[in-house]
Image 1 (cartoon, rainbow, N blue to C red):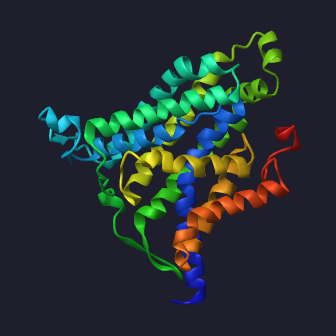
Image 2 (image 1 turned 135 degrees about the vertical axis):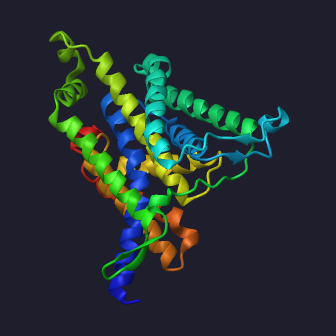
Length: 312
């Protein structure tokens, strides 16, 4: 393999790893930037998406947890991966709406510490309830048949088809959300409410519904991230908390509320992790993203694409 081929392979793998961070971070960023709400339960939405994708796609053999004790040893619908891609975002969108109404909204005017405590507590409750029901065993979410196996790319050679699919799905979703926020009346109301919610209300525009939809969109993106990321690693009750910190780092590095910043930061973090793994420093790949975050925030506290106002 030539040096150019190795570099391009690292970059493409970095794009794929970063794509998962981007899907999580874009939803997290629009919630944090628009609603000023710190949602530490966002990782639980990723976890929910991964398990919903698993149970919709296939039938799972359960050996631990309460369900086998109740006589339920096989659980799942077996509808296939495409059904999971369609159903999961709808379910997590509804879950996000419920969370906004009954968890987030009562805490909008409370300190950040209160928001962190209630959402992190909710995430832990969900994670441990899931572990109690189905056990802590790792499960394998199968790749879709239409995207399995390698694909021949120029210079690079064979590359896993599903990894390329994750990049494409992420790009399409991010472009959709960006267009929705930047080029529609809905996005205009949301952005205006972010800058001066009192003035928007004085103009007779209700912000409750746009905020509700924003939270639902963020939850749907986290759910899709769980579905598309599931085939790349084993699904277990710990994956939500494992993905939460990189997602928050992506938001902060890119600039809170900046979709393009989340994309840039996610790609940087993903590429750095893959580079460390490919060069024999796999044990340092998590440390590396913290070091990168520290260096960037020392130089630009507002993030790569954030404004000075964000840190005042």
